[in-house]
Image 1: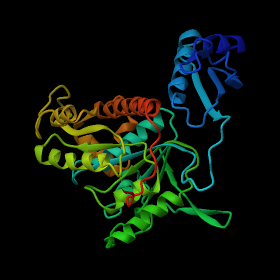
Image 2: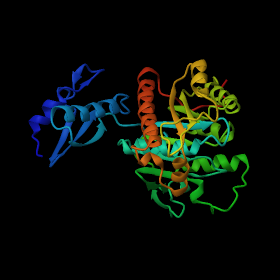
Image 3: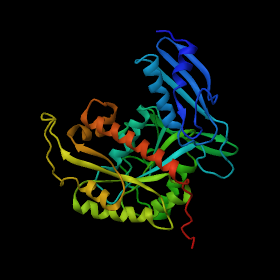
Image 4: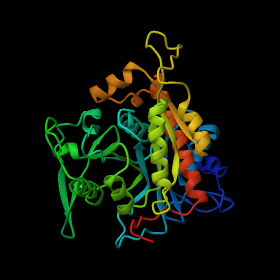
Length: 365
């Protein structure tokens, strides 16, 4: 189906920029309109770098075109800003949101959630990267079936940058790409933190909407290094509903809320919320307790971002390197898709209502 410029402009005139109080056509935010058979593409230009409403406006544009022009139209939107980022000493200046993925203890499926959340964000059109900062037990290469990836570097102004691996639309860096899978990583704290610094500072990340950092379990040197290196937009904490796991979640919340760190806790994700047999998709068995994270989230006055069921295919997909989030018709895939939508909404609210997070000076008094 062919479209006209008039149709596109008319549809997009219904999309308003809430802060400016005008529609995006009147604000001259549209350029480079491209029309094809069943496809519409254009560029949105924002006044501010990291406009907190950018993602909401992009989604509103897609919905307007599908409502006023064609329900099946494929929409491609590029964004740019008139305000340029400061690039002097800022690390990751082209990354809009840095999300720490944390857990109070091991074994709760933190890396599984991080991998599937990254895939879900990428499937929704967000430019996404994932740093495997769990230096002692890197699992992201296996979950993306990129164990054999050979990474290359490029040089710019005398500095080497590592080009991340890429799979399913997600840019990936992990210590696992630099050590043999069978080798134990026996590093003292300074070596682990140095590795994280290298992945952050020397990764050739380019422009990203979301950079997820999959942290080691607990609280320690790697966590402190992260908040000292980059301004973290917010943290999400993964847990099972089990009481012994929730006790460690409180420690993680308190770490991020510490007055010297002060990283917003965006919410909790309850993993393994219930067991659902593949052959009985309507049944739920609460093996680890029921709604433990939901209750804790209410007590701590933070959102419960999502509940992920315990199904065999999540484990199998992680082992095979094909995250279950690739299939949004699967109950677990749908749960991760919903989690991604919720996270985007919470991040947009956080960016709209609060000042940007600053890098932490742990020694500040």
